[in-house]
Image (tube, rainbow, N blue to C red):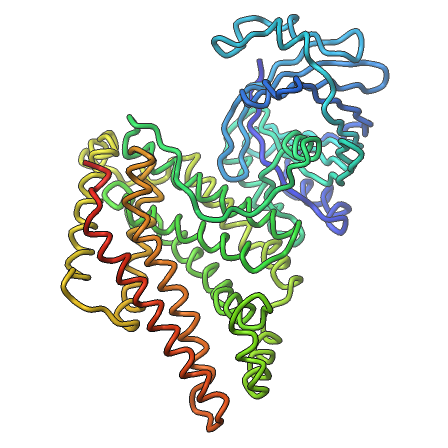
Amino acid sequence: MDTEIELKFLVSDAVVPLIPALITQFAKTVTNKPSRNLQNAYYDTPSRELRALDIGLRTRCCDGECEQTIKLAGEVVGGLHQRPEYNLPLSGNRPDLLAFDAAIWPHGMQVPAIAENLYPIFSTNFIRRTWLLETENGAKIEVVLDKGEVAASGQVEPISELEIELIEGSRNELFALADKLVSESHVRLGLYSKAARGYRLADDKPLKASKSIGFVPLKRGATQEQALVESINYAIRFVQKHEACYFIKPSLKTLKRVTDGIRLIRHTFWLFDDIVSKDDTDSLRTELKWLLSELAWVENAIQLKTYTSKRHAYYKKINSAPELTQVINDLKELQPSIEDIEKLFHSTRYNRLLLQLTTWLIEKQWRKSWGQTEFQAAEKPVADIAKRLFAKDWHDMHELIPEQQVFTDKDYLALRTRLENSLLSGNCLGALFDKEDRNEFRMPWVDISHGIYELSTLEYLKQLCAGQDDLELTKIQSWLDQKSEFLVSAMEQSRHASFNTDPYWF
């Protein structure tokens, strides 16, 4: 068995000619291996039993010789992929699942039944260039460049990937080479394997943006440190997923999901501040703040798009006021272009941030300043911490919005950051508790959060109308005030409902 420890990158055609020079500058010695044309087929059952177990089965043929490979469930942290891998020679081009050692399979897996039902799902065919590097510190790293395509169900996607795999030595050397690579533009960390892309093509399930941030999949018995790792890794993957979605189908809502993931990372640092020193994450926080600032325009852009969408009630009102229409169109013209955003996602600073977060997780860098108190806190069940945190949050929120007080739109707008942070804590730790109870409790608060966003949309439009002496704009402002009143009335109902739901963490 081998365990792959590798980082994947997506590279543009412009970067490909620069790769030999880049790795030569980094390494003490470089061995250039002959290029190979690799023809690969991936197998599974009609019900995707291997996929459900996160197992990959591949045959690979090159120059008349074939092998079969099993990749078992592993771990992906940021751009770092770690998976157990087993290879066996193959006399034909069809896999023989029973030839592998029975001890490698997950408990209860029906290997003979699966072997009978295997068929090729998709193929990947590419030219592979390979370099073997030895660094000054004695580490050995394999660098491979794959150019070709993945094909399934009559559909084809290009492959242009660079993978660097640690063969021998310290992971630090792998990350150092990765840092060198991302210093070039048009190189970005890759989240999805060729197999993942192939399955999506074969099953006609294109990568789509999530509708919400979701919940970190924590196990009930998780310690505080395990919850920290799982939350940061979940958030990094969420950011990378939606970065990939943007390249497939650019949209403002996809960019909003990227900002959600960034905010979840920052919130997790705060949430676990008794084991994560602020000093140890200072540089990461600075870079996360920078990235949020680069995307700070997204929410207003979504609002401007809403104003000009024929599906919304705003459209007819706004079109009755040409001056306002012109202001909105002028503001839309100032927004970054799709090319600007793709440039951001290819930038050294952005990819270095993802790489630094990955390194921080893999090397457990939060431990470097620990004393006995932090070690003990890290081993505490995170469920106990979640209960105390949620109880305090619930108490503080009800003090901020007492049941008997009448709230206005301004009151709700002032509550926005506090409520969103409270909901993010639930996204981090809520999976520890019963799903139905959790969703019932959160529903009024989520409704209020959505209402506050709608209020902010109305408020932004009010600001665009303000200060102009125009009859149509005056009518629009009056209409906006009326919509705000209706919205606040609905939010007040949700707020009062929140007092009648039992906490889900008791």
